[in-house]
Length: 460
Ligand SMILES: *Cc1c(COP(=O)(O)O)cnc(C)c1O
Image (cartoon, rainbow, N blue to C red; front, side, top):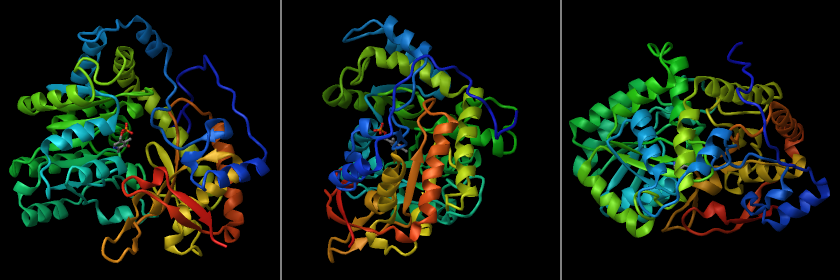
């Protein structure tokens, strides 16, 4: 077996019927949804690649763990399972469970950010950016410049630019920087990994300036798999050993269990700082719940504890990355411009290259997303002008982000490669008739995280 082909290291025990509705109906449905795929109903979608968040298929091992869990307001056995898994795999001293990643972000940022503070990251994800902004902070992306060149092939295209970081700290002063973050893998920029060397360098800089270093660890195991495959010295290490080393360089992490704990809901906020932990815990009790359940049913914590081990399974990661490559290779062969190299949880299409005739302010990725649904009943996600675009507060002018991407996010253990073929066929068909695709005009969007509820109209 090679990296290109690694069969599912599981067999399928339960299935869910899906149905492709007629094209005429799909045209009507997307129009009624204001050309925003978040507004579609799941029964109207054939293959759903909106997100890998909370969409994993859970294992028999996870389900049976949920059944045996004792439900209790305080002191459930599942809390101790999760604590043991966190300490064993992540290795932090303290943690609080939360109902999902953004709750961890909110609790952390509302505790440590003072108005006007800066938070550097390789690249903030949308919820991270919004939670920092809402708490009065200023999120800043310090990723390497090459990350914005979608065709460029680099082994660790999610790395932070170390020189930019040092200059930034010098300029803003450490007092104004309550933490440094790094997102693994980099969801906002193609699901690209960060190297161990880069993590070590960031950690050293953070220590030098006495600034806490936190990892946005949503896809830590996929990132560790890339390190195993690509970075010198890690070939013979397990994903677990690599994860343990990686986290040892950080002071804490935010984690959405909806990704790599293979659960439908859950998250964690970890720290080595006991004083900070006490503050986080007290806020948790006010806004999430008691620390031994953190906003979830106790059974969810058990599923998360077991899922963490399933995510660091070397065979599982091999299969996952091989499926990602399978979809990417089909698209490459069909001429579709994708972000290179293949990401860890999704294949990203460069919508500006796909649709160069659409003006930047007419939401090329969003328009392509709507067309993909009409063409093949496939739902993807937009990580571009709708998600990351800003409005200049003075002039009211639209400020586009540097990338306009359509993300085809593969849920974990859910779809087969035949599904991936259907996805690729639809996009390749659209690529052939790309000149006919028109842009969109945005008619509504709230200020923060506007893409979730935005409305669009086709340009005449
Ligand atoms: C999903 C995600 C989050 C937020 O987690 P939720 O569970 O969706 O609230 C934060 N950061 C990154 C990189 C993510 O992918």
